[in-house]
Length: 190
Length: 364
Image (cartoon, rainbow over all chains, first blue to last red; front, top):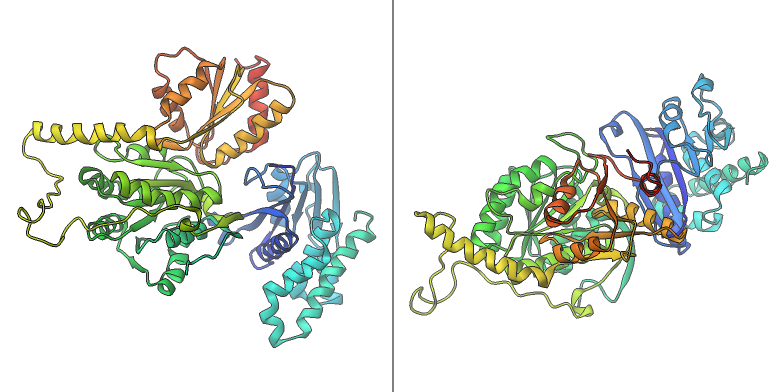
């Protein structure tokens, strides 16, 4: 039960939070790592904030849930407010720069807070539907828990059936992944 | 050819692990009624079962799921069901009958918050219910698992314990274990030298009853008090005889512990992490984990507790494991601290914080 990287991603239903967790953990498995992934599945799932708790490490993971994450990501205003409880002095808190009126709700005790223009980048440069994969790229950029190569393999494994019908989607997803990775690198975190 | 060739590492949910385990254990039929967080056991089973000639029956409620499981067993099928929360409450009537008639049913329980509908998420509040829920003496076996590997291992084992000793057997897990994904190794029990205890019908056996074979005489009704007492005495004696053969537990660093932490199920993982962290710092802390909650590892806990100065019980319930611990330590004079969180998960950090408070004597 060694120290694992603790990641919590939160957003609205439909933002693809759980898909990110599925692909990210698939990449970890392909990389020979151990992981533990638990979605919040209470009734709030139906119309509430969707949260994925992910831990990735070299050894078997200990407890399923954690109080404070190493990386906490919020993709909506409600998610920003909801995730404060999972932030501690060692937490890197990332939220989307397009979220309005949350300045007062941002955690006060985080190690670092970053607003990244993920939604804007996805909308302008790529396609809104790959917003979540861009977020995954950013997560990998700041944590390096898996390689981009394994992440691509995982995307292929999970979404390959969609690429068969529309091969352009593959490039779009891979670009989104790399763009997310770059985005945090440009901000000096990766 | 086996269902699983060799040893296969896989990442899956706990519910999926249970379905695979039942499949490789040779379960022939599952009866069930949907309730979160165990739904996916049924879901995965109904995907796997038809490919391997196994069956599934969805019943109208948990009373029926329990009774049909008994019915399946009576015809000699390796049968099981799964439930949670209010479903587990309804399950107690059929499981009392299974106790009375010594029917080897297997029930997987994924605990959720209680009482009543409460949350669909998680708790350890079905300990008392699963161990002692019937209108009897709790003559049943309850395994409390803490990981997907254990869910797999103990689901296989549950069928064998049930069919060998003929007491209803439960695998007690929770919503976290049900829904989270982590790794485990799948295997065919035969390839590991685990022999599945053969099943046999309780009714409709060949031959003339009373001539070729003793008549099947399955009763859950008695006319006079002494008649019942005689049957129960025999059942209790056989239960107590069985206990030392099936009791399981885990312990660490119990010698001269300033604090011995007692936890079970998924909470044990947090407790163990906390204890190991503080032990690494040179502090005298250890843990004791009952794996069988029924029968309880009484002698083993008493031996560990005798070497400790204080105890701390940690659970996601308000004193259900605590009751078992107190009952089994009767007569021993030891302070018991608690970390009781009904219906809420426990993190290692919280246990570490409480342990430090106790170790430094700051607790009032």
